[in-house]
Image 1 (cartoon, rainbow, N blue to C red):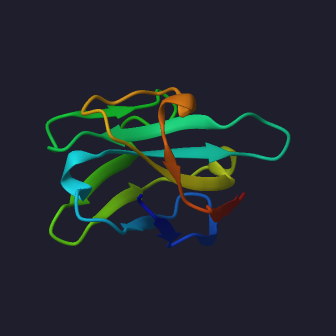
Image 2: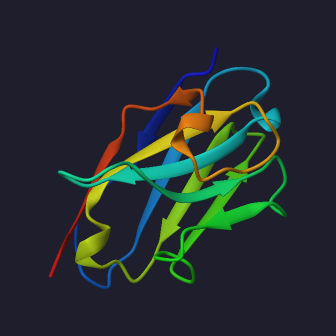
Length: 124
């Protein structure tokens, strides 16, 4: 069982930066593929980024490529999402997710464990 707790959300102006963190419980953190998804009001949950057990395996949605960076610290059981040049359309609840398979996936149905989410609001 893995428990995920997100933090770092907030209200910022367009062009600002935020760093989200996701702290995971459990001893096998390094074995999990970790991902970030987001869900805006009235929209489906969408893939943002994922990272495999090494930083060599990362994936990004086209909408955030070049602006967001995912990373993980296996010693701290934590995954991060550095978000730069934020836009109003980035406004959403951001969720951390984990799957036991060592391959990234953009499909939320492939992830077993989920955090409660953290709100990110970007004003224009």
